[in-house]
Amino acid sequence: MPPLIRLAHDAFAQVDDRFTFVSDDEPAPVGDIIVTLARYLREGDGLVGDTRQVGVRVETDQSVEDLAYDLSRIPVVELSFAKFRDGRPYTSARLLRERLGYRGEVRAVGDVLREQAQFMVRCGFDAFVPADGSSADQWATAARRFRHVYQRAADAHPPAFDERATLAAEGGAGDGHAL
Image (cartoon, rainbow, N blue to C red; front, side, top):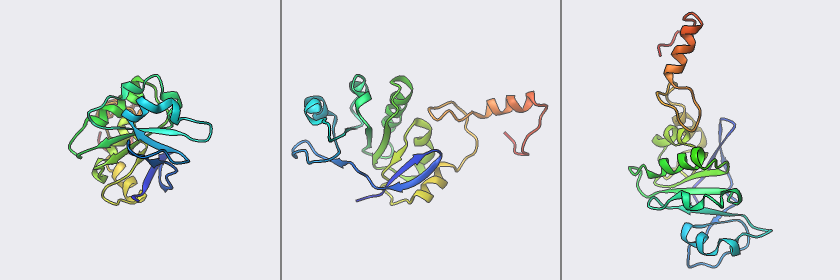
């Protein structure tokens, strides 16, 4: 099973995954599970119980907005990258965080590569199943590769123009790095 890397309090760590993905044609085992969006919409009330938590996997051609009314009871939303070139899961992550106010885990699965780390974090992902076998340390290095960003995102990291304005207001004091 590939490693699960989780971001918490600005630290990346490899953790055990307590969730098991269950395909549509499998019976639900005991314990915490992740099911497809279609199955959740069909059977969600019957799957959620006192002893189990249920997460949902959303494919690139599906809408996270279908979960809007149930997000408070869903601990994990997995966004599937069918191909690393497909950017729709980034949009879904931002919708979950910014428009729908989701505070649970947003997990990237599928064709997830280390080179995408910073972009995923900026869009609101906080858990990753890297397809390239990356370690938590490698993932952290990739996510922090660039100090400056040039637009606002779900991570609330201040863009370079805000940093410049702050430096100008302080009389040009800075750390010696050009912005």
